[in-house]
Image (cartoon, rainbow, N blue to C red; front, side, top):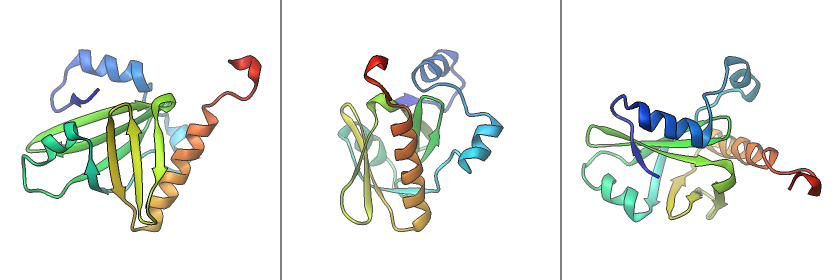
Length: 141
């Protein structure tokens, strides 16, 4: 679900914490060589996000934060900050064209322009983290 995180709201903080887990520790961030993405340019998005993005004339950008059990896609519209928490089990990443990635969760999606090598490396790291969260043995199911 899309959340407005511009203001300190403990209820929303608890929902996000329950869905994607806590912030990574400093040791985990060093091990991953960073837990945040570079500035990402959005090519297109689902209707819910698109309706927020057309309210202003600023560039449609977002960033991704890696959490313990998922990711948070954050973007700004007008003077508000919105967050889309995506747990790893609902995260789907598609590599469409050569310069575009698509992130999906249920009926939300964001297509991101990938025109730098560091963006490709970030999505490789994200894909690896998603596969590491999966089950290893049939007994784990």
